[in-house]
Length: 324
Image (cartoon, rainbow, N blue to C red; front, side, top):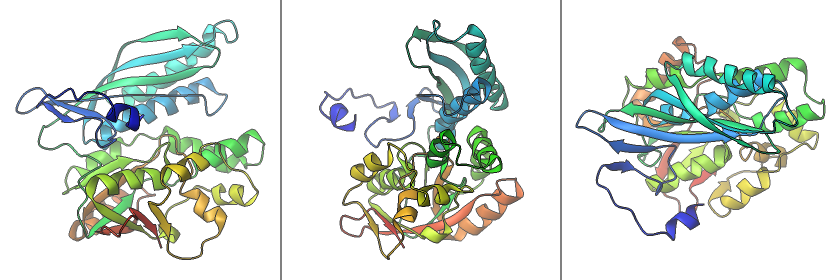
């Protein structure tokens, strides 16, 4: 998609503060000196059979893009692809009910939506939020010698696939689903009291892919200590059993030559950084002097999984992300 967009004529507007150039999480458009719109859309296929849980995960996943920009979500539109000849209207009702639960929790409102008939169900949201034009976050403003905080553990992709094969324990899949249903509202609100340089939410491109986007846009290298990256229960064990996802290899190819492993890790541990996340956490870059205080504030606020996982350095040749 980035290559396709790069080939199109530029549609310039000085009020467009963040567009698609940096592969950011959402667009930001200035309306007044005090208000800018944050706009995004995202939809997914069902990660689980339960339609109510599916709706919650899809909504949390879409709304997260607004939080990653430092914005406050206001309105949501349902994006529905549904096979009415295969699934009952009760299923769709449960999906939207689950989404509405998360929309309400986020302090936003459901304003409508659009649906199409399709053989495969898909669901998501178009979300509009607001942010101050001088206080939004982007994924392309990390500074050298920042520290990096990750607010959620990774491993949802392989766990969801392994669950289809009945390889994951009930306790592990329960934690996985709870993690995906959790909004990024709490960490985003806490972070507003700190000097945040750069933020992205870790989703389909995995930690390596979204880390690369942040590093590339900022002109730095992310040095990540792999043993400090929080993992969901049994995620590594699933890779050790030979389970993977159809996206891991794509994520490797997208970052080929840009991601480096500085020591000999097991192939399974390497795979975890390419694992595609659904409704993942926030990857935050901020000055070293503030990182420990933010970490304490996050944990005091109930963001128990938040961890300092590394730092930024001067760009190291072609390597934008180095796992140490």
